[in-house]
Amino acid sequence: MKTMGVTEAKATFLSLVTEVEKKRGSITLTRNGREVAQLVPAKEKTDPLARYKFGGGHIVGDIDTPVNDPDDWEYD
Image (cartoon, rainbow, N blue to C red; front, top):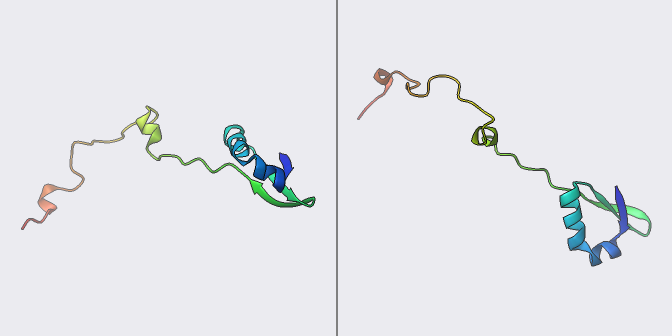
């Protein structure tokens, strides 16, 4: 974990964000020697269908047959 003062962080903020993003680490920011904040990477969002889209999933069961019996449907 890296530590730096807020004044230095302000001057190099964009490079700090890039570093946190690429290395997936955190940076602790200090003011007058006290820890006041942390710059941490965001949680990666995952697509619930990503495994299926990229070949990691498979379909289980019959996808051609309707779930309900057609006689149970109401028509106007």
